Image (tube, rainbow, N blue to C red):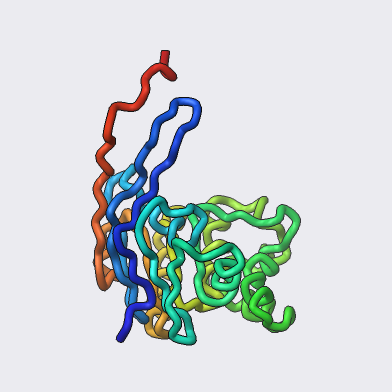
Length: 240
């Protein structure tokens, strides 16, 4: 089986214009993602784990490296060089991302926030809302909150809505950035069972977990990152 994604020599640097310094975030990252498998990215804070996911999703433009994605039609594309229109189509149809924080319009209901990916892919709004309700129920979000904007929710409730929105469309490739960080043990178990179901459905996943037990339970492959070596000491004049 061919990988859905192959990452080779990926690096991301940030240039601080005021300090005229280049700060490395991640370097020489290599990994593969296959259908029905979960690749876990582990490593200490500052190793660039989230930067890797953002480069794949193209929230960040990679500094170097290749990110080869194979779409439903079997065509390969280097996401590091894809244009914004190509990335928009892939995000709508084939690549999903569950971030650490929920970002949505302040007055949109939780039901519509979760239904949004389905509507964007062409699903009828009524059917999308029905599926959204089912997903919210599976993550134990009380029905009384479904018509309420998530801006008023607790951190754990927001993350459940965030997970529901990310998991509902069953993309070919799903990126997960600490998806259970704000969840209690019971809800974490519900989320893990959903992730296991998506694996059985053939979804390829790349995930960041800080809990070793979740890595052991879910990961088929583990990629360990170390903090990149800084070429020279950061300019300390900003601290004076």
